[in-house]
Image (cartoon, rainbow, N blue to C red; front, side):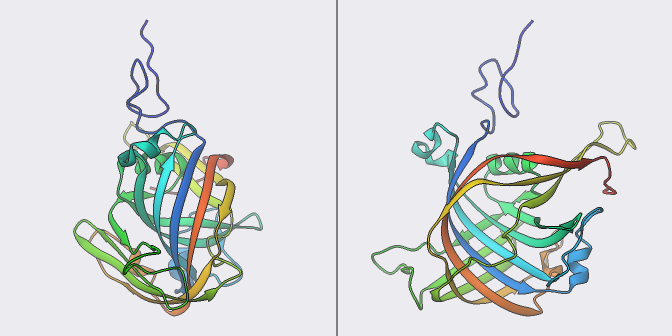
Amino acid sequence: MASVRGYFHPKTATGSSSLIPSPPWHYSGDLLTIEYRTDPARVRELLPAPLELAEEDPGAVALIWADWQSCSGTKEELLDPVRAQYKEAFAVVRCSYKGQMYSRCVYIWVDKDFAIARGLHQGYPKKLGSIHQTRPHPYGPAPRIEAGARFGATLAAADRRLAQTVVTLREPSATNGFVNGHPMAHHRWLPSIENGKGLALDELIETGAASVEAGQPWVGDAELELFEAPTEELARLEIREPIAAYYRQVGVVWDGGRLLESGTSEAE
């Protein structure tokens, strides 16, 4: 009997066509993080049971742009850059589960198929988008990482602009913000192949970095705009009060998570 291999679809005789390799996955990236406050009710509507609002600052949101290079443990993808480089933009809120604080990604857009496949595995609600951000460089007109440096970033999906920002760095910071600073509480959902049978996969999981190394964070100010679109709801997390903006370079290793509970979701 024939056997097929591969960590993810498509599975083949050799496994070399698999869209993503097995973990651990390694990432190097430049992150722009803009934190602001919205109506806590708009955060609450994105938290399925048994997740609850964070008790402190429940309306806090982080909107993050990231320019990534990623690879498997062999690092071979770095020498075939189309398999390593991608960009994403994502919205993070905080929530509570059994008295513990978690971060949760509620919206995310990426520009490569392998990033979407990883999101399916990790519980990130990834969709295709067009994401761009200013890159720092020590020469020429690009900004340096220094006081007064200005970075722009844009997000679009389905031909509609969803968000845009200009971040101006002010000074080195002790932190890179607080909203995206906890383990992630995500759901892994898959509808049953039989109509009306609900979810075949229904898991609440905890996930996060197995290890992190990071450069000096910088804090600054952001001009941030969100835009309505017919098939996107990011603008529902309306900007009520700016908090701060941050820039940081990071290196992250992801190597799995743990199951918190299963079969309790009310998602449709």
